Image (cartoon, rainbow, N blue to C red; front, side):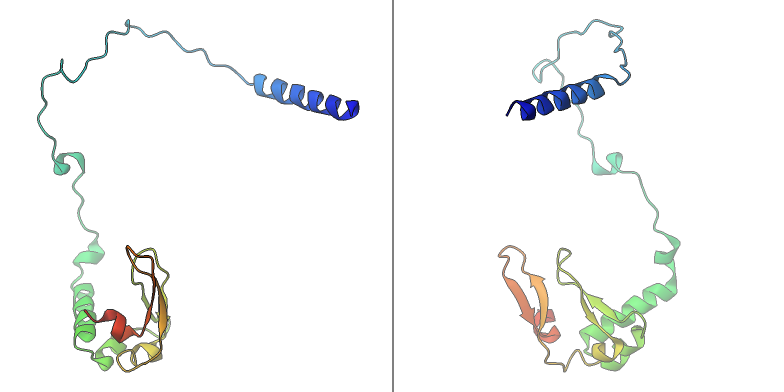
Length: 148
């Protein structure tokens, strides 16, 4: 029992020496004496700051202004809204397929191009993750999940 005790003491000393062996930086004293902290009652009301003043103005990247991108997005949205499999198939590549996510925290449901053009008729039930609020599992076909 005494041997175990000495190992603990030796390890404690080594840890303390290792922690104390680093360089120390001196903290300079404040140039001015610390005055009494103001309270909400002593301060005069300040003018409200808008979000626009806090956040810098950003210009959209050139990608967002490319008319080809906007045309692609419009065709894709139109194909989904009108359940047009041919138009949808024209917007999906063989390499990328189509990834759909029900909510940002859920995983993607992947469809190959061949599967994507059948989305509106396909009866395959997919696991879409969990529902917002309830945490219940969301399962169903693309049509049942995407229907408003």
